[in-house]
Amino acid sequence: MGRSRSGGTVAGAGKSKGLPGSQTLIRGLDVLEAVAEGATSLPAIAELLGLNRSTTHRLAATLAERRYLSFTPRVGYALGPKLLELGYLARDAMNFPRIARGHIEVLARATGDTVHLGVLEGTRALYLDKIPGSRRVEIRSRVGDRHPLRSTGLGKALILDMGEARWRELYACEDGEGKRYSVGLSTWLKRMRDYAGRGYAFDLEENEDRIRCVAAPVRDTTNAIIGAVSVSSAAQYMDDARMKALVEQVQATAQAISRDLGWRGSAALRR
Image (cartoon, rainbow, N blue to C red; front, side, top):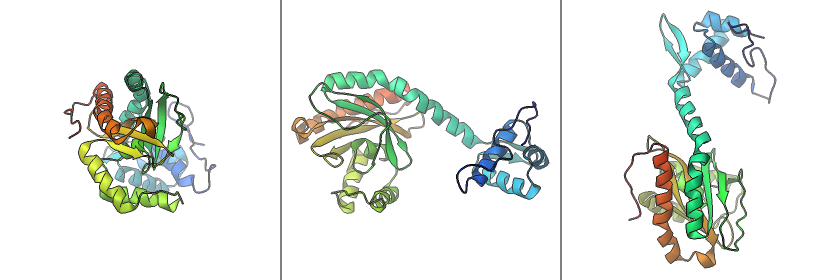
């Protein structure tokens, strides 16, 4: 097992245990940690981790190509800009529910409906918070649940900026998992183009029977979508007219959270 220059153990160094096929991933993480410990040359990294030079070079070169490491001739390796980007995203993700909480509580009180806060996790919407509404309506969701993207309002709001090629991939991904969905691809794409142009998304009883939803994206300092807010209720309280009326309120809440996260975009409410 490798030793750090401070006398500690480089986490995972020399280990290959884990899920089948995970050895390369573990070694790549070991290389990152070795560079973080101060090993900047291939010989130093290889010695620290107990790897041969060719394996170390292959791992380091791949990490540099993906910007997890940077390389300067005659200087060596250093941690790369991708790690900084991920660090900022992780910071925002950890702060996100705390910053959003007051805003979504106000929205729940004002509407009387259930409010969700969520983020994109792979090909699912991960629910980070839920404020139950005051109506006697049961929304079958829990904090920590992962829901489909194409059928939930919150999920659609999370992918508004991705474009049609990615939308097709996500739709096909859920098809490939055998999930039943009543909206055909062409209709769904037409709706997504409309939602993307307007900056919000609807769930028209697509994910849960007789439940409708209005959702809007939350953005960060770079104007990238990092989360979404939704208001959900029973269809009897969510006819077409009320859904349209809620759009501005939901967008305003999402934008207030975005501003607290450093967003400086213009207020592009519904058109």
